[in-house]
Length: 340
Length: 99
Image 1 (cartoon, rainbow over the protein chains, first blue to last red):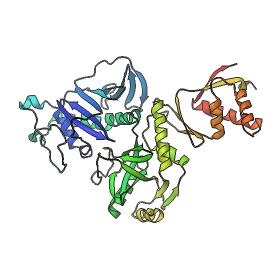
Image 2: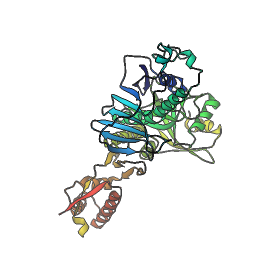
Image 3: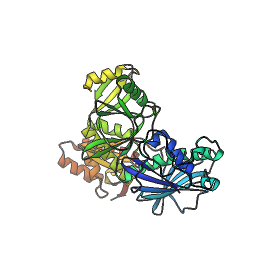
Image 4: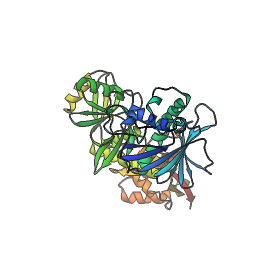
């Protein structure tokens, strides 16, 4: 059995799997590698990844469905995340069955295990990590000779990891954040300049990565993430936690998972023929923060929690509408307007 | 008017939060096709919303608001009718029964 733990927003999720390739793929993905957590004693929830088909899970009550994509159902005292197979109609690719207190669950994958290293090599895989990460980040990893070999199961293992990362994990995490009253996952680029953190919020293709890139190259600002992050409130102070879902600037992002950063200002971005800045009221900011986050629309308590987070952040953080042009002038414009 | 004998109650499928004398309403959705907007009620509309408790008729709500606010009965009746129409359109309230 292989283990890896992922820490986001100071919550630690432990994954158990019989596939060393799956564990290896988790470590290989750059954006995830920095969120792997080496302390073995702590976990807030545990998932057991099981291959070989999906069992009958009883009668379900649909809670939410994303178009033709994943759905969330209630089944007795558990919740189910269900993912269709994108290649085969009417086939379920994966189901995650989670206890309603979100402390543990099973992920059933409708495929054979992506590797059987132990049986094939006659010995368990050996820990071998490269790169400059200071701590061993996996309990075990795959043998070195596996790293360059191409074989069919590896492709399947990568596919499964991508599915878990892109679909299950993010959907689960949004639900988890709300149920545990931690915060909200948000669409935002996070840029730190002179030790102050600014969030540039906007949905897909509004220019988050563009703005982060300009700040990074023009003044050497630290970009923590150009696409996503967790926004939270502690002791009436708004905080940002990094998340492993990154946009196009993965090589320029300073990914980390260890500490929260106080949010100094929030900019709601839109492309404009000239740079324009307008401070907005709290009442204006609340729906904008909400629209740029991933609230749990299907759960009343969670939706109320989301409204509360948006309200508290809008109350404590200066918020602006920011129309921007795609060049370095945005940096001098904001520095001049707001003395950043 | 017949409509003012009706009684409305709040739907269970709506989240709400009062912020600075305004009420933010968020319908609960089951599919992404439904997801549209967050709704904000001003102070007067919030007072009307609060009084829609599944017990009072709309007429009783008008009477109560007439005593609490310096606004004409006609204006309150018109605003309440519009609010009921808007809230029903997003399934925030439902008719309970007529008395």
